[in-house]
Image 1: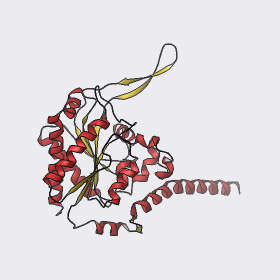
Image 2: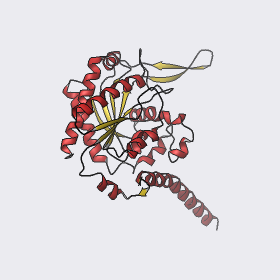
Image 3: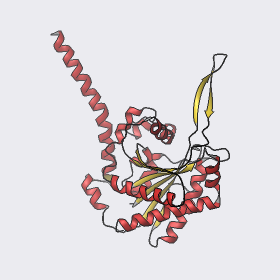
Image 4: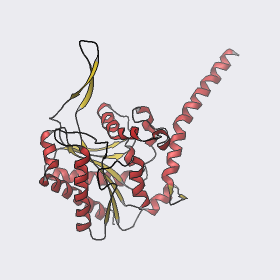
Amino acid sequence: MEKLEMNLNRRTKLALIFLGITLPVLSIGLFVGEINGKNLSTDQVKESNSNKAMKLIVIDPGHGGNLPGAEGRISAEKDITLQVSLKLKEAIEKELPGVKAILTREKDIDVPFRERSEIANRNHADLFLSIHCNSADSDQRVKGKNGRYTTRTIRRPSVSGTETFVCGYNRLQRGESTVAMRENADILMEENYKENYGGFDPNNPSTYIIFSLLKRTYRDKSIRFASYIQDEYVRLGRENRGVQELSLAVLAFASMPAALTEIGFISNPDEENYMLSQKGQTEIVGNIVDAVKRYKTSSGM
């Protein structure tokens, strides 16, 4: 009898663990499938977004307001991403006739992650691109001689290059975990973030599994778009850190191909100056516009 009770308790625990993982995933999956008040299956969503002309791109300048993102020696990520995004919107509408671009923010304000992708969903965007600056700096807790802990910034100014991410579930290796947690950290500033994101906690790697089914429909197209962006960076001699799949909340809820591009390391003084310069911003914008053109052509849009 005692053995039977132990087996039942074990089964109960396993069932609760299973429900704890799957229910948030299911709730997010239902949210993604609900477009314009209609519950659509994955195949229906895919079908509704195929074989149509490209008309709209949503550009997301990362961070904003009281959430500056990564900080360099003389600038903040939120300011660089907005400057580049404003130029990108103008360039897309000039060089791609018939294509309109919308920004998730046009000034220094914070926009919740879910609202950023929802802007793209509401407007039936064909592409969603989030612009960010990378950082290799990290904060470290250090115990002083007095026994008290202080936080100091460990600087790694030599790290450089560009990389572009698409949303996908990964095992979160050490370096990847740092990037994902940094880019998702703004969620913690939103009210009721656990309810809004299906129980997701950006500080808990185990909860990243909730993103595992969200982007399957658009995975291949997202990777193709991200690859074109990296190709264009490399063409101008930028260091290539590649295309990676990462569990990023800002991409997870977008119902179209989506990517997040890190245009350079703000923690590297040379790259920070490049991203702040007119020449650097013009080149970055040109790279992305050329990548959009390639994607548009390859997709028959």
